[in-house]
Length: 178
Image (cartoon, rainbow, N blue to C red):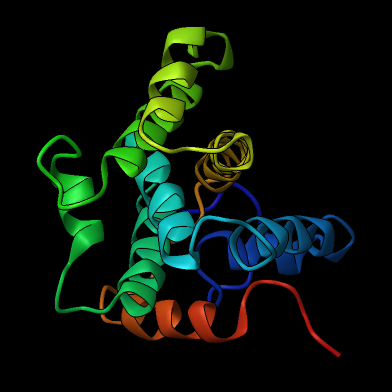
């Protein structure tokens, strides 16, 4: 049961964004900039990072919705995001993506845990400064989003709804478009 009255038909962060449109709009715009906007990382990779961090934060709504978006963007046949969520070390992703996910995992625990060694290891497998920047910002933002969703005990969506939710996020993004 949510700690505040939010629309029952809007699970997870969607209800919170509707509850406070004045804060909901910039939060949606930030998610859109991070996950849809310009980046050397593919949209599927960025959604995978969001799902990975959300999973590490035990935020089921965010993990499931961003994993669904990543599946849609990456193609279901590979189930890459599911492999990352199950065991990043054995997941069929590039060495660069594994290094970036290692950085994201450290940011999820605390930003000061990221070391020069972690950054050098990512660079050694091809990560650019922008890859590292975007990974850290996605991980930090999703830790905040996860705490927002779970701190107010929002509702989970029906499990079947995540496929459609992921498709909608992949196709239309997060910010309202005119």
